[in-house]
Image (cartoon, rainbow, N blue to C red):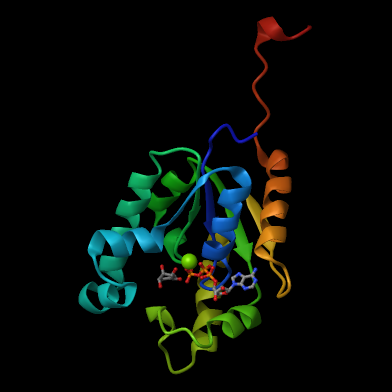
Length: 184
Ligand SMILES: Nc1ncnc2c1ncn2[C@@H]1O[C@H](COP(=O)(O)OP(=O)(O)OP(=O)(O)O)[C@@H](O)[C@H]1O
Ligand SMILES: O=C(O)C1=C[C@@H](O)[C@@H](O)[C@H](O)C1
Ligand SMILES: [Mg+2]
């Protein structure tokens, strides 16, 4: 159905891109990659260390580099970082594939990330307010995805992956009809 076209998962921190992406790759028979993990491997540093040493700007450069390299391959399910949508150049790579927005309510993100200190942008006096602000800034960008999946607290990665796969036919462009193959 996808002919090897990559699937990119976008959305806020904690929406489940990594968790669902891994399961989606199993269901599709695709390989799984996570841009955050690749960045850590390329830099031999954690995301927190990269932010500390080079700031968000340095991190975003690595993110674009990793995305451009991975987009050359096919048959991949790719979990991206929450801020991948911020740079215009990244969209040219995302649009090589099918883009799926995992849209989770802020309350669920807060609940999931409450005990997590690996997201530098959330090391804030008020993480809930920060998440809300980031979502407001990014929502119109996430909305440019081909498919939007609304996430509820009890949706399992298996259910969400099936939902994504069921939504794919509706967004795949119909094959162009060659004039010599048409009946008219
Ligand atoms: N469908 C789900 N059901 C239960 N727990 C989930 C689900 N999806 C994600 N989680 C949990 O929520 C937390 C955040 O998930 P995950 O790391 O996949 O988010 P993410 O979108 O990849 O975030 P980031 O942008 O920071 O990489 C993890 O602890 C994960 O186990
Ligand atoms: O939302 C964001 O900007 C981020 C999300 C994470 O996936 C990481 O890419 C990093 O912590 C930044
Ligand atoms: Mg992730």
